[in-house]
View 1 (tube, rainbow, N blue to C red):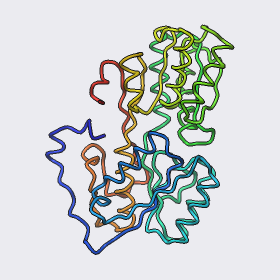
View 2 (view 1 turned 90 degrees about the horizontal axis):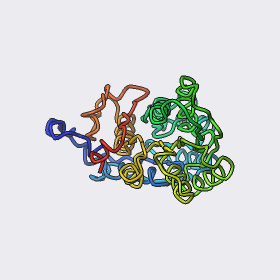
View 3 (view 1 turned 180 degrees about the vertical axis):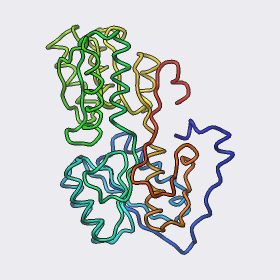
View 4 (view 1 turned 135 degrees about the horizontal axis):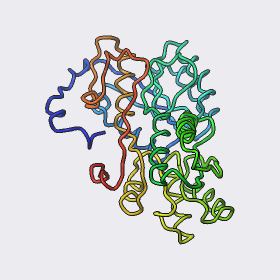
Length: 320
């Protein structure tokens, strides 16, 4: 995350030598959709040094939240013989076959933000979503004093962050018997759907709800709109979520939301460096500043875990 890299780290960071001017690489970037976080992720890749200097020609293919669309797009990537693909699948299991087809065609796949089943991808770079789910649940339990009634708003069912965050949430809830789960439902990473889901629950359960776990900020912000419209106090109905998007950072300061900052800079630029490592080989040296914080490991690791940054009223000023 740019804003958290220290001056000392930046001073000590030396950009790798630029790739030869005659070398040009075509990299397909396949987000599952382009909500706010994913748009930021693609913009971070556009700002990678190798894209800025023209070494990489980047093509963005919007998956439109549809596994079939993404599968067809991967076929296009193979047919057009891209040098590498950076892939954020909408569906963990359905993504395995498209990744295998690309790998079989000699096109390395870097998965980022979301993951794919199987092991045919070159590398995966993302936050540890099981840990993220656990962290926000433990924070909510602490804020509730280990007692209360909660609801869970989930991402698209089958999307790897939904699966893994829910695993972390459930693991943490198992340690807090005083907290009762009233309901859970997908709102597809959408603020509007989060609003609708929460409105329905407030009609069913009223002020019995004392806590909300949202698997991303957009859904949390929709839920908070519904809570506010009911005239309920955020000290009574406590909300936790993940992503650290700008509107959520404002909600941390104004309404005591707790969120985890997920760095599009780390996930996007890290994925581009790994794509270039897959294309160029062992001689490639990373060009993004994120590796002053993360271990490059020669670009040979199969998985890179991007750190989480907790955001509350005491820390939010560091993220603006």
